[in-house]
Length: 168
Ligand SMILES: [Cu+2]
Image (tube, rainbow, N blue to C red; front, side, top):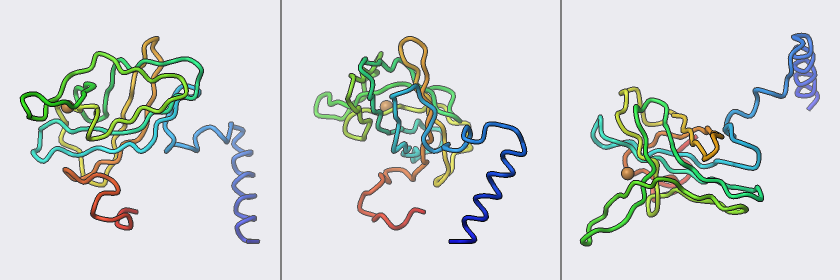
């Protein structure tokens, strides 16, 4: 306890010595989104075949009193990205491109394998299982929301049969 306190005090002192604004760069994992918009649980199911598109999943919470509309997406390490809805056509799974996705005030929209994803296309080949990419959503009006995306093995959804303890 004592030692921890001393380290914290020393850190605060050194930050103060730099004369900067300490609090700014700390909470990287939370992503960088407009006020009241929270992205969480970002992960990607890496394509089984190198060069193929990968699907990105996440939750987006809108705690504001106004609706927001996602109108575009991008993913670091990929040339292009699109918003896709999963459906069925002739009893086969299919994907439809969404022009925009409404995130109503006070609600959370979930991008998950059964519903929607951001399709990340034309990978630069640097993607590795266990690594991280950054997804950025652009809203109507120009606001952007960036957040980390865990790169997972093909079909390896978080919390699926493999068990929790394995990561970390
Ligand atoms: Cu897709």
